[in-house]
Image (cartoon, rainbow, N blue to C red; front, side):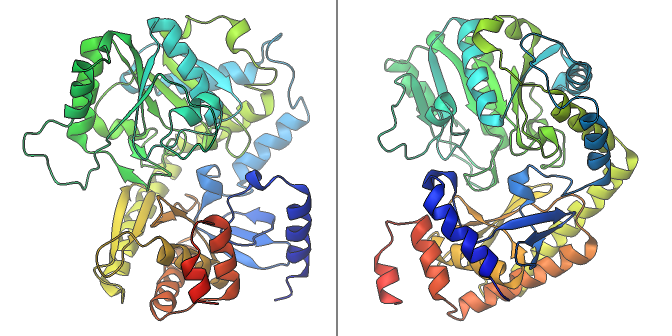
Length: 450
């Protein structure tokens, strides 16, 4: 394969683009996306198990989406939503309100991405409750804007840290049960030692952590947390940016827990491939801020909302629901088969829900094996399969819902082959180069394999 175009663009990108623009796993330069296939500028095709980080849930160039874009482009792409109304925004909001858990009255504020949706949820929570403290959880990721990055459990370097953020332990579905069945002991201890629950505005939580490793929360943990919020008047806000729009098998991942959140944050697939985010919440919460504090020039713009409507209506169809049911069953079967056949038996574990799964990689001592996971992802890329790692040692499996049966089967065969290659000691200079770019603190391994 001649990679001259990719190599040239990679070099120019290094010269011109801020390094913080990318989290590169491999030198992929995308030229086009057609359904479940990504094609690079050199003409190589890849089966897509990433769905553009779950922002292309229906895949690339889906006919329903393409037609909606063409129709709206001919009318108007956007016109400042601060100073005017638009029909697609209202119609999309009506559809979203109709699926709010519990069917409670809700209103929507559109933003340009999921991160800014988190920021607005942060502001609304403080304005409505007139409180300043926020609770979040370990291994969470809510975005890269100011508030969203502060409530994420991530290495912020020298980035300013807000003082009123409190991060507590998150309990996963596959964690052993706690003997006393109290998953909030850490929070309760904090309430006894200076953190007044009457000062806490909101809890932000991913019912299924995305970048934290695609691991669902333990149901009893969510139930206890929800009841704690109700007891103290704390808003329960569900981050559905990555897991929304059927990625977990339901419109929202919180639906798996039988609780009704006070607010929901959306992004990624909300715009069916176009930039769009939103915060939707109980109506009275959404009336606590005026436009001077939350309006944005083109948030909720016509093109993205019209495209989102087309996706929403298709996802309501029997055709989509039957397809999703069948694909979820096949994906589950393929993963179980992969684990049973793998030569890395005992070193692989499946986590996740619906059409959003992670394959955790461990070393022979049972420790999280970040290096092997990265090498498997890179080897998949070389073989023509796109996936990345999250949570350090977890392979991210999130194909588009439109993926063909043939490509879903072939993708898992390529994944199995990649695992075998890595288990046999496969490594390349290019792989090591990108591993160093992703994890510059890892030096010993690079030296040993040079």
